Image (cartoon, rainbow, N blue to C red; front, top):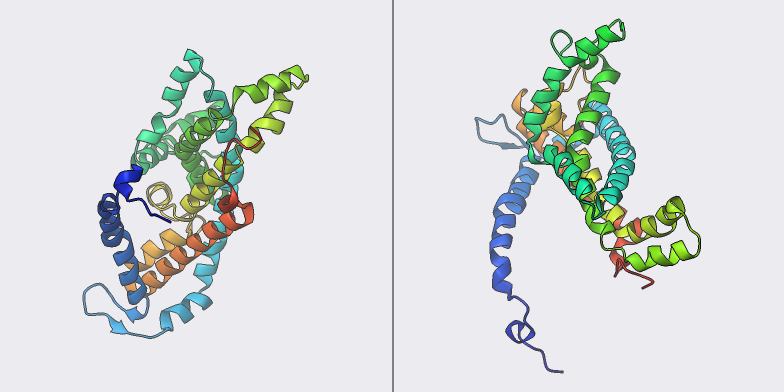
Length: 298
């Protein structure tokens, strides 16, 4: 059997992948290898790292603060998915319409996606200020006893959940919008002839046709929630107490406040392994790797 060269098949050659591979090696693979090595050392960031074997990993396994951070990370990930997915799915399907007013409103709605996490966290921290922020004014209108949302553990956790959703729902809406626009109109026309209403069409046509998109959005959402950092750093700094200290913030606090970079590297390595394992598990359980077409049944 004759093998055609990339030039004859019209496909780009391997040389086109070199810039991407170099970027991945220098900015992703190499740092991960270095961090993996540092996880087996004691290092304060100034002196030379000294080999400590598996001490950091043994400490990681028995660390109560790490257990609490893992629990908060999993809770934040679960609530993020439950909160963001229905809203992004409905908005994405709505924005997939061709009407001009939907295009204008969608463009406005996607604006938070263009801002940095730090800028948005500063904005919401100002709004949540218990003395001068909008939060204080709302508490005065409704005669609430306290306007210090970030001062209570549940309030601070809810604030992190809300601010991250406010920033990332537009991204997932955009993903669902693209997926919904690929659904053939003929399916809806046939369903209308059979007497199916809008709700029935949504659950019988839209959701099944978007299952690949749902898996893609879910993987991005889960991995993103496991690695939230800058929003928590600006908004709550892990507090009050340890109420919002999830694993990435614990890693930062251990490495750059306690200068225990060896143990922080072990936390970072464990986080990379966990996020990768969760992503692969989601792909495996959802059958995403076996899906071949978003237009099945056509």
